Image 1 (tube, rainbow over the protein chains, first blue to last red):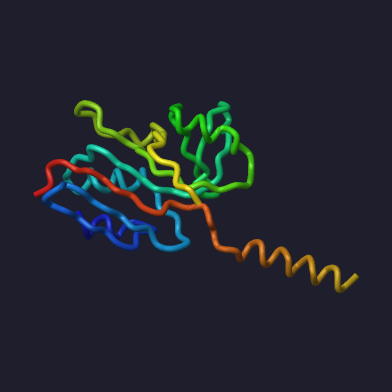
Image 2: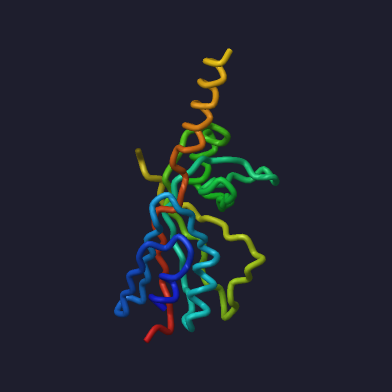
Length: 130
Length: 35
């Protein structure tokens, strides 16, 4: 699995902890990494992903449906699941200010595999102060 | 006029050459069934 994930685009390093069942992926500097692609690659390597958390920096924007989203790449935005923390980011929508967020992008539900057509939404767990 | 054009080209060059600040810094997964 480590080798399989290491071959994915934008991946700098993969750390696997067999004891905790934890996989940490460090992206390359100034390169874009696709969490959905990593999720698929992990499933393809024969294991089940229970949760995927990410830390990302970007601007807060409003997407086409008016939902708040984190623009983590020029062509990629992750809609924020409404909660207290996402509400606190409302005032930043459309401003040039950038924030660093840590949040849960995927959580397994039942025995279903994640569908590539379902967009990943970010549950904000922490807003990192600058 | 030439100086203005040069300044504009230089400015655009700097904007496009700037590193992408927005990005994913770290990903952590909890997996099951790993041996």
